[in-house]
Picture 1 (cartoon, one colour):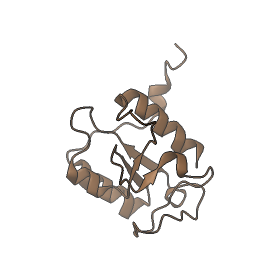
Picture 2: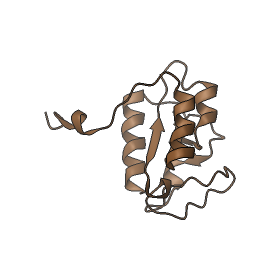
Picture 3: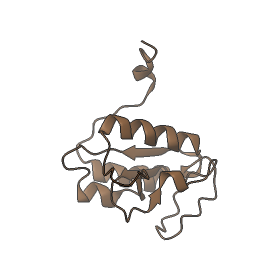
Length: 128
């Protein structure tokens, strides 16, 4: 009951081409986009991002310095979650600025999407 009504304050949209929309969010509006992945070679590990230091868009994936504490140059961020069976499509994954994962204990290879979503959204928000 605590969360009742919060869904009405969160921007939710439906688009016909998610990869194209993610590129536009980044290029046209300066919004940092994150693809949530379980890959060990992800660009970022959530727990390694210092607080007050969400990575900003600089169109250089090799530079993870993040010189703006607000994320996306003050324009916000977007985190894409995949399904539990297939994750995020390659096209959508490549459209995002960064691939981010949650560091997990040995022997744990994945989390349910709702749990991972909660951890990532809280973690990114905490690091703005």
